[in-house]
Image (cartoon, rainbow, N blue to C red; front, side):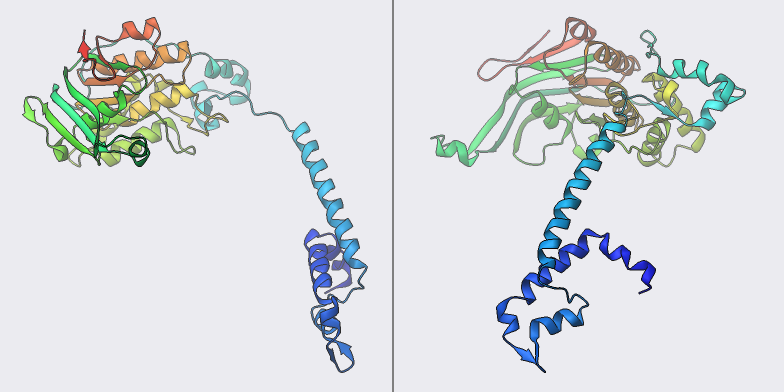
Length: 375
C-alpha cells in the first residue's frame, strides 16, 4: 500500500474495532503459551494478518471507538439542526409541464404559477352523465346473509364452546344503480365484513344466503370483472404521476377490445369525474413527506378502481382519517361517481352531518340480536 494511503487505515472505525478484537483474542495467555520457532502462536497470527500491535492498542481502540461514537452523534445532531424540516405535503409538478402550462418563459412566470399550484382545490358541483365506455347498471340484492368463521382459541378458553362464530346474522338489503348508499354501524357491527362478503373478498369461513346481481345469482368469476373495491389504505407508486397511475390501471384492467384512443379518452373522463385533472401531472410522492395530500391520495384510489369501468364499486371508509374539508372533497368525488349511474356502496363511521346528508340511502348494522334496517 502506498505511504500516502496508509492514513486512511487510521480514519476508519472498523480498523480500531479489528485491532481491539484481534488483540484481545490472540494476545491472551492461551495463545502465548504455544510457540512456533520461538514466537508465540498468537503473535505469529497477528504478524501474518498485519495486525501486530502492542497490547496497549486494545485500550487505544476502545478510546478511538468511543471518540467516533461521540463524533458521529454530535455530527448527526448538528445535521438535523441545520437541515430544513420537510414542508407540508403538496403536489409536485415537473418543470417541463410547468413551462408548457405557462406558455412562456418559466423563470418569469414561476412566481405567478406557484400560488395556483398550491391553491386549494375547488370542486365543481355534482355532474351527471355517462362515462365514455358503456357499462350495464346493475342492482345488487342480498337476503338472509350469514357469515361464520372458526371460533378463535381465545374464546374457547373463556368458555365459548361453539365451533363456528357467527359474524353476520340474517342481513337483507339491496343497493341500486345511481344511488349513493352507505353502510353505517358501531365498531364491530360488521360493516367491512358485509362489504367483503358482498364483494367476494372473504376467502375463509362459511357464507350463507342469497346474493343476486341484476336479479341473477352471483357468480364470483363474473362479478369480479364488473366490480371494484377501494380499500381503506391508499397504496400507490410514489415515483409516477397521477395520470400515469390511472392510465397504467386502465391498460391492465380494461379488455383488449378497447382501442388506445378510447382508453385514453376514458382515462381523461375518469380524471375529470374524480376532479384530478388539475394535478394529473403531479408526482404521487411519499405519504406525509411530499407529493399528494391524504385527500388527493384517496381520490386517486377511487380513480384507479373506477378506470376498470365497474358496474358496482365498493369503498371501505373513504373519509376515514380526513378532516371535515378533505372529507367533503372526497364525498363530492364519490357523489360524481354515483351520478354516472354506477352502484356505489360505502362504509362510514361517525360521519359529520354534511357527509351523512350526501348519501341517498343509508343501511345501518347493529350488533346482534338487533335487526338491521334501511331508510
